[in-house]
Picture 1 (tube, helix red, strand yellow):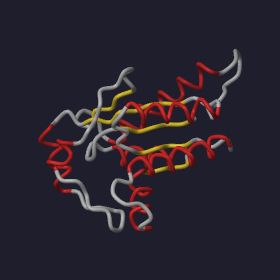
Picture 2 (cartoon, rainbow, N blue to C red):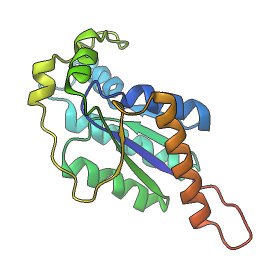
Picture 3 (spheres, one colour):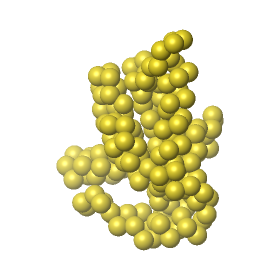
Picture 4 (cartoon, rainbow, N blue to C red):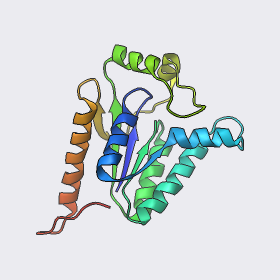
Length: 181
C-alpha cells in the first residue's frame, strides 16, 4: 500500500505521517529530507522540487514492489505530482491512499508555522507569507481529509488506521482477512 500525505506546511502532516509509519512499520519518505539532500549535494541549480518528487516516486515504487507499505510526506501541491503517486501505485499493483491534511483554524495554522524549527539540518522553515503564497491546486477527487484544527494527531492516526482496515476488508476475499500491500 502507498499512503501519500499532502498539505501545506504547518498543517501537521509530518507528525501524523511519522506516527503512522511507526505504528504500521512502513517505509517513510519525506520530501523535505530528499530535497534538502539534493540542495546539500549541490548538483542542481534552483528549484529541486520536481527532482525531489522524482526520487521519492522511484524509492516508493521500489519499496512497494518489495511488499513494503510506503508513506510519502509531501506538500503534493499540483495535479502532476498527485498523478505521479497514483502511477507508482498502479505500476506496482498496490492500493494507494491519498490523505490531505489541513488546519482550518488560520490563526492556529499561522502559529504553528511561525513557531516551527527545522529538524532537518540546513532546511530553513517556511514563513507564514510563503505558506500563504504556496501553490496548492484544488483536488479533482477529494481525498481522505484530516483537519488538525478538529482532531489531535493521535485521533488522526486512529482515523487513518480505521480507513486502512476498511480498505483491507474491502480487498479481502470472502472468509479471509487480507492486508493491503
